[in-house]
Image 1 (cartoon, rainbow, N blue to C red):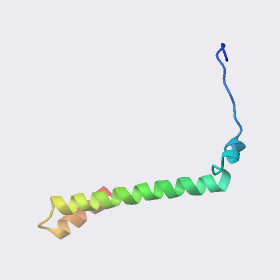
Image 2: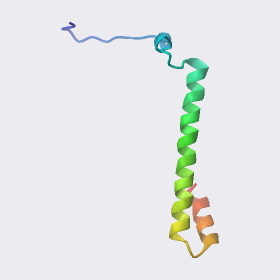
Image 3: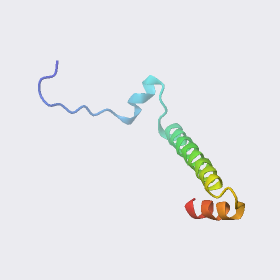
Image 4: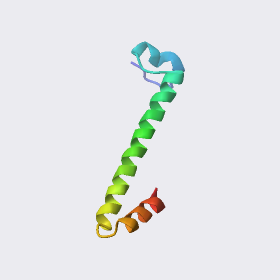
Length: 68
């Protein structure tokens, strides 16, 4: 058991042994996650604008363009 304050420094490749992505694979995974999140937010915004301006499609589209 560690009794003193301790900092453990683990190299970037340590996660590779656990099967986690590193390097380019990690970069691609992060890009996929961010892209999916942004696409989900865009769908939500479009839906919210369409609901709020349900009687005026052009106004809903303009509102969505300003928000996105």
